[in-house]
Length: 250
Image 1 (tube, rainbow, N blue to C red):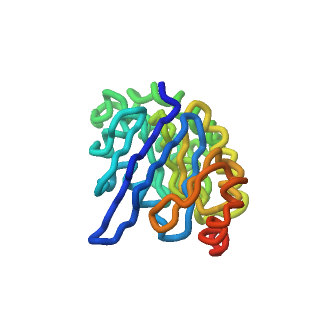
Image 2 (cartoon, rainbow, N blue to C red):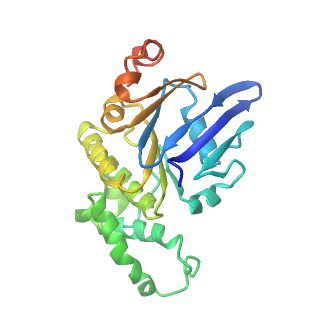
């Protein structure tokens, strides 16, 4: 199997004459944590939307595990193993932590649409659900409704529901946005734990998170790749310092 899990070639997106993403050639190595950074308006979220098929590119190609997924639908790529979390926490607020994860585990199940079946018939999912809850550090909150969790713990729950789909590639969109210092530290530790056996591509504005986690960083500016490499190389690049580090973002 190739060392590349995700690759884009000439990825371009235009909106009525405005070029939001321009000829982006991205290569994400299998088993790595790859960060996509840049100032506001650099095109990071548009790239994420192109990769997860919420947008179709104007031109260019996207390949996952060597397979062209440029025209695939979001549900198709999720079944292939590409799963995304969003900037805004997306959990069922009035279900418990365990119930949220169990719902996610039902997605690949042949019984997924059998809503009239007894709840007990889903008990076989509980062991895996409890393990995922433990994996993201939410064991003490197993039976807590999601609405009662702190913001950081809601994001941890969202990552648990993402892991329930057993993704080959996890795309994390601003995983620490809006968090206090304690929650940021918790999410950093969590991402380190869950990277085992999978690849993570994340959009992140917090440079301490990027520097502490990322193997490779791609810097976008005005929809184009400005620089790429490990943190110590990218952070000392004069163009990056001018375009990003010096803007007050991070």
